[in-house]
Length: 125
Image (cartoon, rainbow, N blue to C red; front, side, top):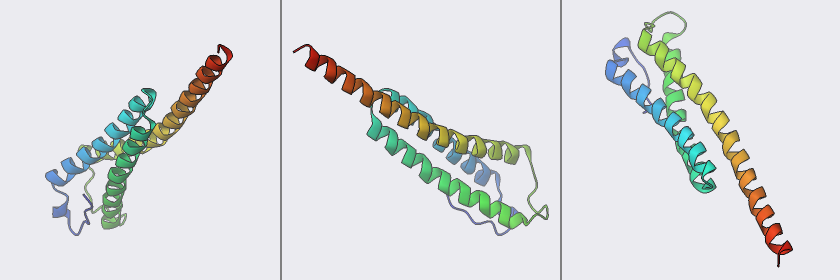
C-alpha cells in the first residue's frame, strides 16, 4: 500500500491497520529469512529479504506521506496506534539490517563447513 495523504480523513483506522499489517509482514519475512538461512537455504533467505524490502519501501513511502502531510504543524493527531506503528517501523528497519548480516554470516559458515567436509573427505581417501 502506497498511500498519499491529502486530508486527515485519509488517516482512517483501516489505513492504520493496513500499515501495521504491512510492517508486520516485512518483519516476519526478515525473521523467516534468518531461520531458513540457518537451515542452509541461502537463496530462499535472500528471496525473503527482498520480500521484506518491498513491504518496507511501501511502508516508508506511506510514512513519508504522513510526515509530508503534517508539515511539522501537528495536522496528524498523534495517537497510541500511530506511536505503536512508528515503533514497529523503526524496529523492523533495524531487524532488516540485522537479518541481512545474519544471513550473510550463516552463508559464510555453511560454505566453511562444506569446505571442511570436502577437505576431511579428501584426507580420508
